Amino acid sequence: MKASLLVVLMVLLLGCGDDRASDFEAYIATIRESGMTETAQSQVRMVASIRTGLSVLSFPKNEEEESYFMQYLSGSCPNPEATPDEIQLWRASLYAKLEPEYQELRRLADADQSGFVSTEEATRLRNMYEFGVMVTFVFDNTRQDIPATARGLGLTVEQLRSRLVEYEEYCHSLGAAYEDVMPDADAVMAGIRDETT
Image 1 (spheres, rainbow, N blue to C red):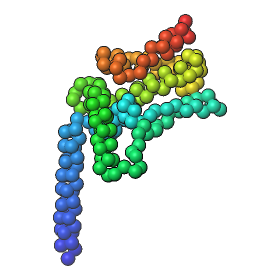
Image 2 (image 1 turned 90 degrees about the horizontal axis):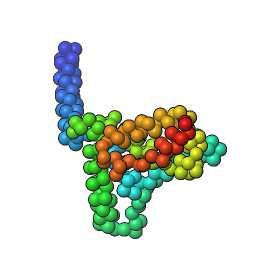
Image 3 (image 1 turned 180 degrees about the horizontal axis):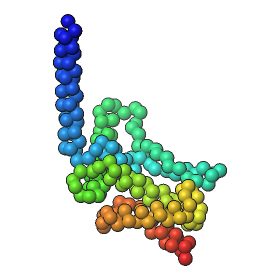
Image 4 (image 1 turned 90 degrees about the vertical axis):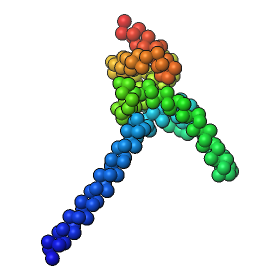
């Protein structure tokens, strides 16, 4: 009796393993076919959403700490009185606006030009893009004062310099296309160079 029960349990467990393995293999095949990880898709789509105005990236100021923080807002919402067909059309128009930007950013995110965008590559694109937007915003809002910009970002001047160098190197690694995509932080770079001379 115990041997029969053990055989039945083994058959059931092995059968479940096969289903899980085939589900996992199907999942991996989907990822390979898409050319990027799910997280990479999400990271690139967020940058595309910000660039097309579907999402708004803002930087409210914490007055007590004299620092800024990132806040994401929706840049669009459907008419609450719209019919299901009208909402479907609205969604299609958003997708039509977002998709070309997404495809361009996806190409840029593929830093090693392997044809596959890793989570690390896409996260770096998003982090660098958001840093570029934020540093230029804070710099302009602190009247182009480098120490105040550093404080506004929660950094020391040296940390700000290091982040700007990293940002500049990343932008140049993208080739000429970066000028159309990445925020221009040249004024901040010039300001930090002046600060150290």
